[in-house]
Amino acid sequence: MATGDYLTVVPASMVAVLNGRVPTVRVLPVDLGIPPRPVAMFTLKHRTPNPATTQFARALRQVASSWPAPDPVTGRL
Image (cartoon, rainbow, N blue to C red; front, side, top):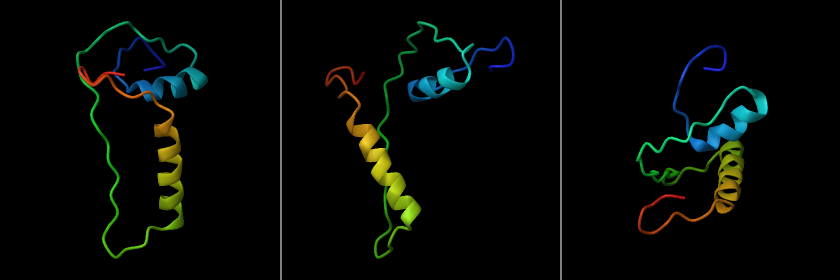
């Protein structure tokens, strides 16, 4: 998408990453009407997660806690 005349849809969380690396990426003011979907992480019963998984979960919780809460009516941020 960043190397030509393309249009694509990416999550809003990727925009900050792309804008830091690819300054030509632009956000268009388009509301697709798609509500955000919940994401979950599960661990297996009687299994200890490896250190990389534990670190990833810790970092994910830290990032997610900094996000604003969705609107209770629309579900949008």
